[in-house]
Length: 331
View 1 (cartoon, rainbow, N blue to C red):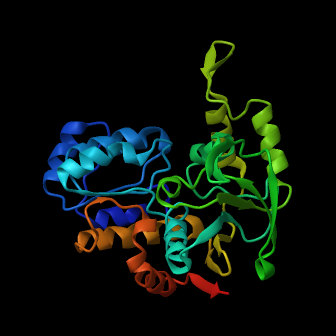
View 2: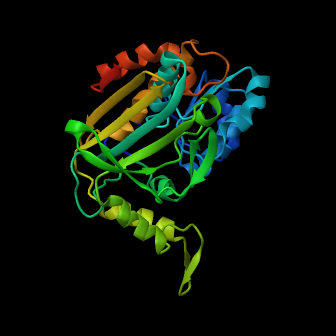
């Protein structure tokens, strides 16, 4: 586990450690499994998830892979199994809120999803802390982001536009367009929709500088006799030098606007160095989704969280019991 504070918990489980590419080990394990729950780096996740889905097991995944999960739809249908992609924080619980708001209002014109896992106050050098895979973090600043504009899907440079966001007592933030809409692009019909990832002010200009000088590139470059990928070097440096022992917050703020009504929801979890908010929120949503599948309450097929709105109050109750503060408004 990436969190050394909980790695010892593995000893309390009937666990088997193995390399994820050893398919023969995977085959043995899934024969005695009711459900496979996956959380992998984006660069390897899709291959592993595809292999699992092709073996007709139920899968609940939280990996940030670039591929469209619906390319697996025919396999899932033939297997009569369940595959839930993006079952985490955002995308994840944010999708559930969007689906709930759309169902509540009926006729929807625009949707904005604001998400952020950030330190509780801006701290140097970047106003940010590493709470998840640093390579996947870098991917957010590089991967072209999809938005819906005038009912058409568009790709935009994530750092082209900086959005100013005021969340009242939480503070004022800046945000960038991120590629977190994913399955919402297929399942939600709306004129305008975007996801904005929140950061403390002045963070994004620094990240744009790092990107523009090539430090987020995945292409191999030669330094003397050594070949390196700049993005991997930057990821390691971020992991080494960004502050770790700080309190953080995980924020989801969704606004669904109809013709004459608006639904909004703000969900906030405050974390500590021992239990950082973003991975904790992710794990809570992931675990509860897995629980629903294990209990046989989820329909067969590909079921991202925007399709699980009948469980919205159940998710809320569970998250609140774990100290997530949730406030919703209909006006």
